[in-house]
Image (cartoon, rainbow, N blue to C red; front, side):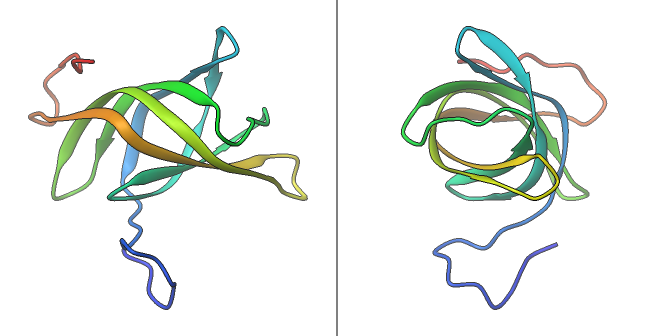
Length: 111
């Protein structure tokens, strides 16, 4: 799904994520993928992150059209609290390595 009517350089999409892990503050923090764009990921988490912080990221993204393993470091672009107690976090993925893989076949992303 691609969102329209937004003022963005790259359109957002909503692929499914498997095993998405964010590492920050010396621990692994669960994250739920909300959307992606060419330059970043939008996630929801129970822990706030500081804008500008560098975090580790690893996991798999897939849709009907593609499957990608990812690993590396991302920069926190923003972190906003929501009324439901979650934090919406934008991650700039310029330091992340993406690698295509065959869906259903286990693969480790290279970092």
